[in-house]
Image (cartoon, rainbow, N blue to C red; front, top):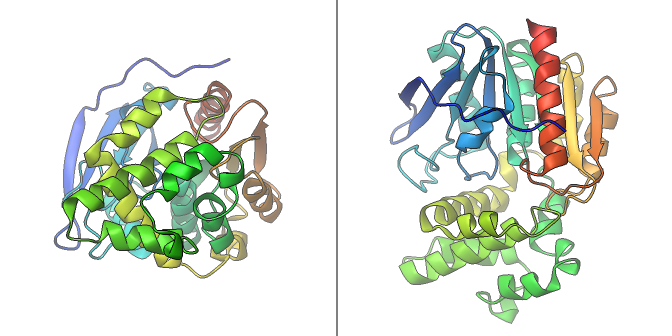
Length: 316
């Protein structure tokens, strides 16, 4: 089973000014003359992780990470102003132009798969390939599964803690209830809601409990950006038409695509990956039998690295 490449350090960092007040953190590692790949992180609002560089052979890839608006090292932190799917697609294009790239490979998981699909459907001529993990189609039913009714049946103990910040009369719309608290001026209430939201998602993300991931989700800087930005997007239906990523899939049918999804993914149930696969009949679908949602689970990691090796040969 393949494991991550050894630690890779970035050789170049940028702060790209986009719509005021936003500045987007962008970094490059690996081979400056290698195959360009853009890593599109999840959330929305999670920020990029250093380990995501290590899915790629640094001798063959020009590895580009960025933090989407309001999260990670981008500033201002937690900002929702001018923060929509269309803005993020525009930021990706701005990065491509800034780095003088004609075509690139997109590597995205969870919300990163959503944003990669949305970008590719707008700019198909700029995408050489797609490696997508933990498919999230952004429909209302997909959001409701995790944050209203669905995953709660598998994690009733953790669900009880998720409900604690929300009075019972508001529990029929948990996304809206959390959104209101995360916009509140009361810093203590805002942070309590952010941690509860982030911890719930982390607990659902792996097949076996991962205390390191859960503890990371409690970190205030991370939790606040993730919870604020996620609820902002979900309240606004991801700034997309319902079912858009599937209905517009024909625009990218010609783009080589590899889909990797855990059989027991409780954040984004596998039906989403299968529906995308049916809409992209030439894509590859790899179902990982002993895995949930996280890219760090061994079977998911193995399949993702196999995909990056496959594209390294295809795009060389």
